[in-house]
Length: 124
Image (cartoon, rainbow, N blue to C red; front, top):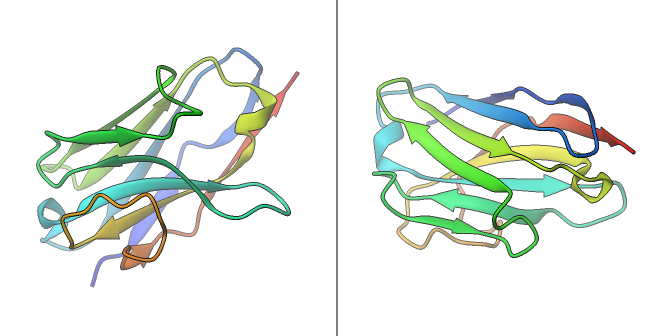
């Protein structure tokens, strides 16, 4: 079992940056691929980024590519999402998720564990 807790969300002006963190419990964090998703009101949860268990492979949604960087520190059981050049379309609740598979999926189905989410609000 893995428990995930996101932090780092908040209010930011358009063009600004935020760094989200996701802290995981348990000793098997390094075995999980990790994903970041977001959900805006009235919309489905959508993929943002994923990182492999070793951190060697990364994948990004086209909508954030070039503005967002996913990273992890397995010694700290933490995955990060650095977001730059934020715009109002980025406003959403951001969730991290853990997947024991090897697919680094862009859909929510394969992920086994989810955090409670952290709100990102972008003012124009």
